[in-house]
Image 1 (cartoon, one colour):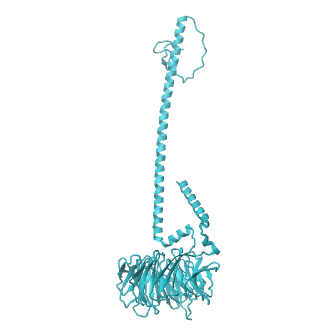
Image 2 (cartoon, rainbow, N blue to C red):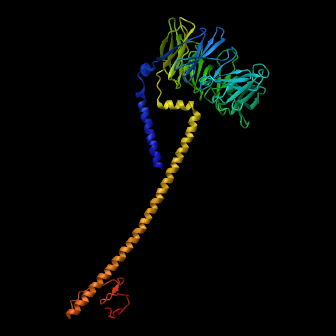
Length: 534
């Protein structure tokens, strides 16, 4: 059994080695040019809009985009859905209020917003709505956060109407019931939930001490962690697709840059970017994007460790308010928009050496490109330079190559419940298979042992029968020889030459030389014919 397992492990190791060795051979030529991939225009769509301030909101899977029409005062005029496969545009009915914020679920399949004391979900694919009653007073509501699995809502209430949360409710969207409540105490400033919704984190500042309270929602147990240096902070949030918490230090000088701390699932705290003052403007998954310094350069931060892993200097033709608009999942390539007097461009930046590559677009507006479909595509929207009521949406092949192993890692990150369930099922199948093999082998060994034992007994019985037959034949031959000798002596009347015989071992059987009857060792006369035993 163990030999089979070792053999399977060697086969798997060899397979991984072959895949790793062949990966560079599978890289398309375009992805190797100048160290950066060269995007290729795949399709382009033109949508009629109401104003030049309209824009597209792309879904992460690259299948749809939401087109939002806005006027010069950022008031919503209308919404439509763009199918990025067929180019079909479908009007959709969503709130047109400026004060109504519309969000998108992490999987990119639904939009949701609050309407009074109700939460409304809108399916982008089939345009169906689902309404949940929150059972709260409109005057108490402050804000909310949806869990990443879409089943739990964290509600923040403002009972004092001063813009600060005074109570946190955990709301189960399956049962439409509040499952946990916590009233913020004096000095407790901000709160958020864990990724799995089983822990509540509360930041407090009392008597010049900064603390993080970790509350286990199922049993209500509490753990207190101290913030390094007792730095006063003003907010706590969680990184999407991660258990990492970000605690932002308060600034007294009015600057945009802050000191940040990070905490893990158990509340263990450390500084971010070695305690430098930064502004984190993108906190998604494994990588954080933050601006630093007077030139608003961008640093890439590992959300798990809080350490800086890349530094990207901002060029003069890159927007200072958002120098990097997106970054690849492995952190090697960043996207930004570049502008000049003649044209604008999609710019790819190598985060390791700062190398840049531009791809021009036909627009007099700056663009904010983004990655779609696990970095396989790049999307950008811009207003037509000759007609402000036409919006262009271009989709490019990014030509960024990822190895099969990296693709598996991305799939695991995006589908962790499926991966965990599949892993458990695979382990159970392997254990069951090993058990079946062991049982069958045990039965086979037992059967072989039984067959061998039967054959040995049969061989022993057969050998005994052969020995017995040989003894009977020997007795018969000896009797015949003695009878022939006696007959010959009687007919001739002359004594025959005596042939000396070898002494017979006492254990050899004796026979009467006249009639051949078997004799006991002590017999002196034949019991049958009466002749004396010689």
